Image (cartoon, rainbow, N blue to C red; front, side, top):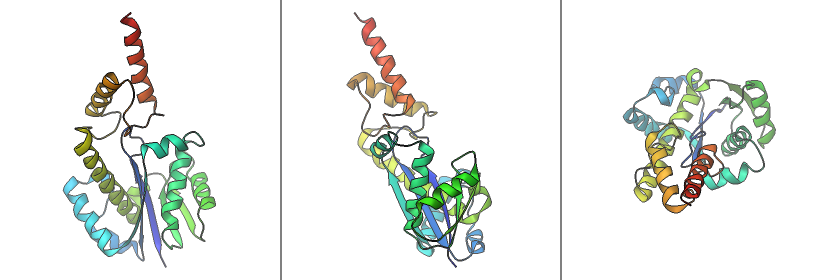
Length: 213
C-alpha cells in the first residue's frame, strides 16, 4: 500500500514561488529511520542530505506555482484554495491509497474534504495541523519542498541580486522590494503583486511622488 505525505514551502512569501511536494512510501517507519523531521527544525546541510536520500529512495512529485500563477489564481480563489489545488495536483502525480496533509485551513477536516474532492483517484485524505511534526512522510515532503524552494530562491538571487528569503518578515527582502519599486515604479516580476505588502510599498511610493509637487 502506497502512503503519501504532502507539504508546501513559500505559501506566505512575497517573492518567489510556492513549492508543493508529495512523497510516497510503503512504511513510515522507513522514513523515521532516515531521521526526517519538520524541515524548519533541521539545519540547511541536514535538509540537503535528507532531500538527496528521499529523492533517491522514494517516489516524489513536485508542483511549483510562480508569483504570476498565484496572482492569477487569487482573482478566482483564496490562498488556501490555491494550496488545496496544488496539494491535489501533487497527489495526482502519485498512486497512493492514503495521503497525509498539513492542513491549510483552521478546520482540518474541511481541508481534507476539499483536497479529496479535487483529486482524480481513490485516496483517503487525512489532514492535520502540524502534520509535518506528526507524520514522517509529511516531514519528508516538507524537506523536499523547502530544499526545492531554497534552490529556486538562490537561482533568483543569482539573477536579481540579494532578495533575502522572500518572506515579508525578512528585512533584506523588504529592502529589495522597496528599492526596486522606488526605481521602477512597479513591483518586480518575481513578486506577488496581489500581496498587501507590495500594495503598501507601491502606495508609499505614490504618496512620496505626490509630495514632490
